Amino acid sequence: MRAVYDVPLELGFIVVDITIGGRPMAFGAQIADFVRIKLTGVGTRFGQSTAAPMSGCLRPRTFDELAALASFAVGSALDLERAATR
Figure 1 (cartoon, rainbow, N blue to C red):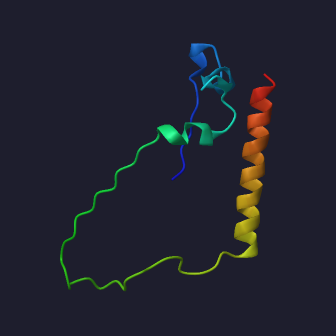
Figure 2: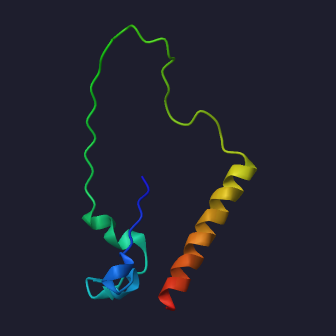
């Protein structure tokens, strides 16, 4: 799961102005302890599916896919750093 945590501009402050446990907000993981998720599923048409069952990853990621993910992570870190210097 991915989520975006931001403060609307009209409120006049940014995420790093918020503190959690007395510490300035710097990483999304600081709010992870406060996130609760519940997943509910419903099964239907037992024995009638034409799709093969899947389990886990279908294939390893390519180098290009991994490079794109790394680039995204670095870009996100730079965005946090820029926000912290506002």
